[in-house]
Image (cartoon, rainbow, N blue to C red):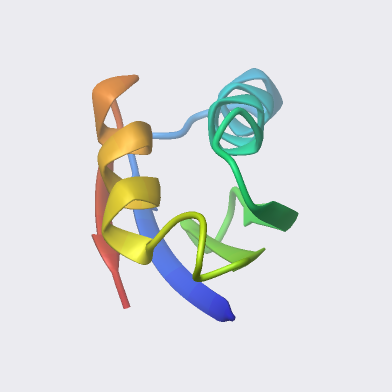
Length: 69
């Protein structure tokens, strides 16, 4: 499945890397693409291993306001 997310609070490429790394730690993640300027991200993942809400929660835990779009 492919899901879009709104991610607020990122200010630099280090923030993008931090978000990507945290998402990639979850099981079933296939591809992560974060866009700093648009404050958004797209994640491709295996629905049988993780869901969109778990991904959003993981990003929120590291300090960024995140919503499933």
